[in-house]
Length: 243
Length: 197
Image 1 (cartoon, rainbow over the protein chains, first blue to last red):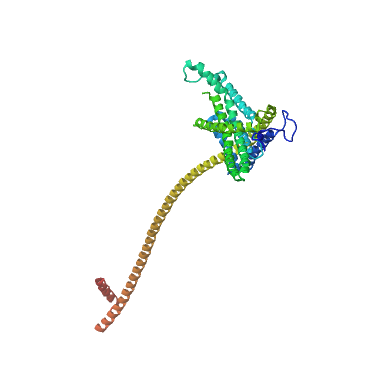
Image 2 (spheres, rainbow over the protein chains, first blue to last red):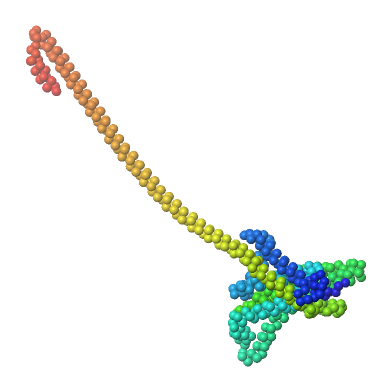
């Protein structure tokens, strides 16, 4: 039986050598994700109905959801980042959800993918801050209201906390996805282990557990996509408005 | 508020990581397999396809999907504001029309009263005229009747005189035995008529 970590192995689709542009199972699910997201959005809006049906309501609801997230956390200036944050949210959400389909692949369970997205957000946010405020942006690292005597201590802490943002952002998503999928696989393995020892009866408990875990993982899929985007919005807000 | 929520979410997420992490570590020890996530040979391919798919999705959302949703939402908002404006306009129209109706009704009422007054005045005037005419006719008829009466009286008196003349002539003849002188008789009758008249 396959080990719990085998589900994360990346291999080129249809065999072949790994190369820097090889189309792998991970790539395939990224492509399927953007197809699914586009189908969801464009398909939902195909009628452009004044009174929306269920599908159009869902498409509009995601639009409004991200729209209000940006309005609440960034304000009006965040409007121009709406397409980016929306894409980020849908890409992560659909990647997480499609990854829950048995035998599929969860590209968000790879640290390099989440780290790339987090670093992109980090660089974007820093550049936005620098363009908007120039060198004044660095006053962000000077804690407001703290006594000057504390600056030598506080400023390095602020800088470290700023630099750790991409790490926490990427590890949170990657670790959640990897942990969840590993756990499901481990419990699936118990079905055989316990089942064989107790004439099948013992297999019921891990199956029940896996059903519950699946529901929990759906929650996590939404939650982590949401957290990633809310934090992106908060970082954007910091860059645009400093303190 | 939002910050508090995101901290709470972080706490939940960290719990999941810690719980799952130990399982993963245990599994890795048992299976003896390294984490596929640390296989650096797959990194270029993952990064390449991430960049490609994310860029494609970004353009699709930015240029195709999101404008459509925005259009529909704007259209709906515009429709609602337009409808509200139409309601406002209609309400004003109703108000204008109702004041106009009031004005027309008031003028019609005063016109009607005018007509009524004029009609009653005319009726009264006609009545007076007719009365006068009838009075005049009656007066004329009365005068005619009086004239007739006078003529009849005269005729009757003349007849009477003739009868009186004959009676007097025959009485005189019988009394004197000779015919009465005509002129004496006439003057005597005249004197008697003048006395009587």
